Length: 144
Image (cartoon, rainbow, N blue to C red):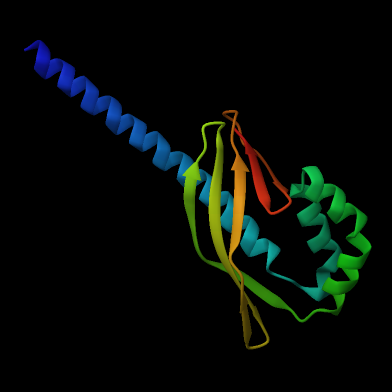
């Protein structure tokens, strides 16, 4: 009887662990796919809004670099063709012991009948229960 209870408890704990891991994966992938779709969608008629949206999520070195080049980026976006970005696929490569996760993202940008696609390898940091999301370099940061 004790063995059956022990086995049942271990099975329950394993199920809960897999469920929590799947939930963390969905949360991270949802954030990254949303950001990449937005990042690859360009509207030259709203270039200021685009730069402001990216800066609002930027952190670390990426925030510094983006801020320093904001005027250049603004001009590039204003001169660009409109583009609609989507994410073809995204997946978790691995979770690290320090709470970070490596994510592979394949966004696509459709610009006037030309499709451009590039795969991004992104590192995400997760630590606290509430998510404050930001992008740092080619890495998204989610403090949870």
